[in-house]
Length: 358
Ligand SMILES: Cc1cc2nc3c(=O)[nH]c(=O)nc-3n(C[C@H](O)[C@H](O)[C@H](O)COP(=O)(O)O)c2cc1C
Image 1 (tube, rainbow, N blue to C red):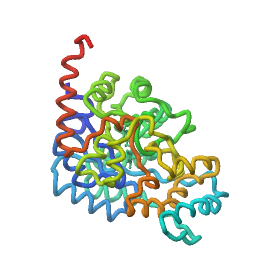
Image 2 (cartoon, protein in one colour; image 1 turned 45 degrees about the vertical axis):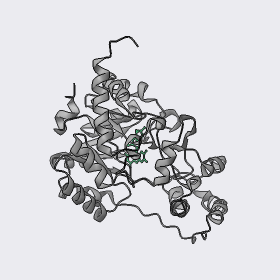
Image 3 (cartoon, protein in one colour; image 1 turned 180 degrees about the vertical axis):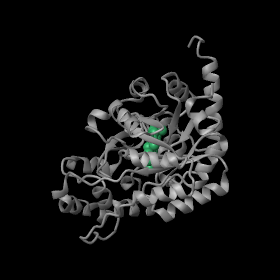
Image 4 (cartoon, protein in one colour; image 1 turned 90 degrees about the horizontal axis):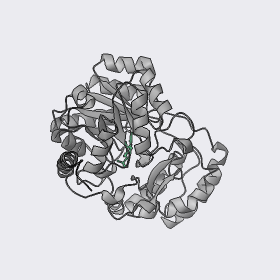
């Protein structure tokens, strides 16, 4: 049952990816999952080439098994540009509350060079690259594949999945609307691309000829068995590993997830300008009334950076971006290997007992 097109292509034991989560997927987490027989992923979207090389080497010190590095496809903000100063002044209220000074006017947006990031991935012979927020052009995909790298794109609709397949990727992560973190949507409107995992995966499976990996709301063996039944060749799980001991998430973020319920989950643009799913807090509730004028990604992310940093230093969850999926109630704080091993045991038992009356 564990042999799928995904495990075959990657040469790994179990079709489970620990989702890349920029800022939280430390080498210790990535290697723990790869050592356990899954695919650990390092979220490198906001890292420069030097940081990526150092993380790759740290991962390699701890595992000989395959792992993935994940990148963000760069984009330019398109909306709300006229309101940057207005939104920034509105947020001074929170800066006062956090006792920090307003930033200077010349906010610079650091854009990581995807060319340099990819160069490191090729040079360091990373076995798998995944990406989100867009597509890599076919020439680039071909170059990666020619260098032995397996390429995984992320889609939130059938249209995006078909587009990525045409660009030449090896596999597709289908990200359902339950998923924690940023929406990967890159074609069409965000609102009409909020498709639940149960509806999205079989429709993508029917529309492409490459392996599909299911993401969004999968926390235990029940979710894994369901995804395989939908035709997925694997799963990608973020929130389930975000609260693990090895995760680099802030302790207060982990605590908030462990104590959260599904009703607290919300998709918001307030922190970064790009819709992302997390736990509702004061910042979201108060800022969402300005949704129409909040600048687009990555500008809003840069404007809120000092607020998020101060909140994190002061352990104040009301101003931190508490990204998490809708099934956060099922999260557990355990070593990553224990979480992983229990996923395997549960899935095997569920599949064995599927035909029993429930
Ligand atoms: C804290 C957090 C950070 C994330 N960062 C990334 C990222 O850097 N790159 C990416 O492709 N996906 C990222 N995601 C989305 C995951 O890849 C995945 O789609 C999601 O976690 C699946 O839903 P789940 O959290 O319910 O398992 C992030 C998710 C979370 C919760």
